[in-house]
Image (cartoon, rainbow, N blue to C red):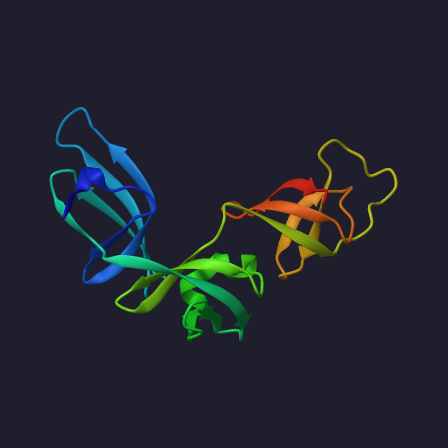
Length: 187
């Protein structure tokens, strides 16, 4: 058990019998009254989102989660399929649970899979990842206004806004939390 004031972003707590990921957390200490924590909680089993206010004096149960390494194999539209790299056991995670993380997964790459009661509930992806550009429209001559951008598509199907000098075949680094272009990568 942890106190409401000890809740941190990224931890898993049990709320109403289900594991929830603390997606956002704000500590509020009003001038009058007791302090509290405002949380945005994402249900790790079905992807639904709740906004809750928890008093700092209230006890919250931390979810007993563990992780295992898994290799991403493929997606079938409804689920993402992984293989445990030690036992070669295959398992899947619903696209609804992964939400916006799905387009960042690269086939063959290894990821840390968060498990709860022997069931996969989340995938941990790096904060920044490198992708190959597969489709980039050509820049139009004279279109050089400061900060000009265009939309390109990377190897996983993800669309990203990038500067106009990015071409098909380039490698770019993308921030996976915001979905924004970071830099061109020269390898």
